Length: 439
Length: 101
Image 1: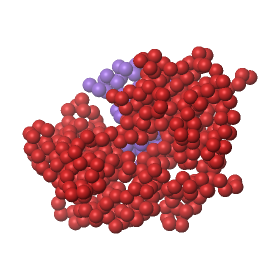
Image 2: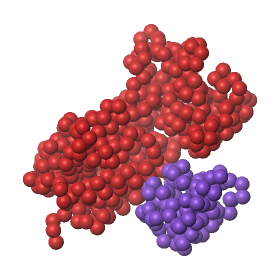
Image 3: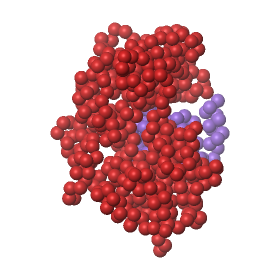
Image 4: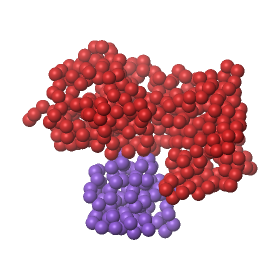
């Protein structure tokens, strides 16, 4: 039998796992090394999906199954560009697939954006989800009003976590530091603000609908935004936009007299102009693009959720407009010409859109490109096994899938004592200590 | 709760849904696909991608389609998993046009 083709996949979120699966189930002999910067796998399933959406996180059972396929190896705690370079990987693998997601928040580009109290959604989400890079952040939750800028599901996540009661979050896998801080929060109102109208909002109806069932928060609209009520989106806006409109009408009719102590307002047709305040955010100035009227909202916390882009990787062509690695159908390209042996999938290929499963179709497409190119790929000059072994020497640790399972077991045990599905370790040091314990 | 395939799939069976299901919870017989409610994680990826709008969440079934919740549960238990796209049934495009009009 011929030696298997060796593929390095960089990034262990859904896209990385599904690309690995498509390769390993292709019937062609392949071995896949899945590299991950953190000691914990699963990318946005662990660090993006909100803690109060536990059912979505059950997808990790599928990833566990993929990790059990013959030829699969997890190489955790290894950062590409810091611990190992892309050229080193390319020398030891037939193909390298970058599945490193979209880790950078797009900025609003308005004055005052860097004031204390102004944040980007990625930081806030990483914080409540226990991402090691965000665990040390703090958010001032002492003012009555917060504003979330953006009309997507991430904006809804941020607002919902700010508006849920501690009891609604206590039995989720929310990071302990975030639960403690939110329990002391004095925020009573969150306004979700966006430039467009109802038809342009990118909420999914299911997540928007959750705002009608919050324990201590009433959700409504501001009649200044939509004086004629919620308009019916045109047919071409799609079924989701029409479903959203129906849900929003329900919110506006239910307004008032709910007896609930917190309030959410979903606002339309408002463009952020600048943030102002003495040393920290005190006001957000907005304008209506259609009429040039302006207004100012007093607020102590602003979270911008207006999009994400892929962090460029040294030496990899970047499509600045789309915010992804320059690629055609998953093949990384320079001036439209494929770079042999370099591929991408997931958000770093197609931008930050779609559901978890979108990455499955995406991973299948990229894997098909790799398999189709096999005959023409440059042969590796180095040994992947030797490279992975050398990484242990460089970093002092080995995080294979068994080591991750030890981390996971310890987190589950910690969670049990406090009634949570898991209590995440929020520092690399804690994870490495548990991972390093004898199996 | 789960997503549910309704009779609009019958005779089309495009199986676009299968390509975006993260948990392989679609099952298949000669006529249509079904969702296993035990495995569905409510990600919602399949509903908007269905060319004929056959898939709905169980908590928001269109009027008259409620019985499909139970039919999906029963048929998913009796039929094999489908993990990759297959060609649609003959006449699928005509049926899709009919459903859209």
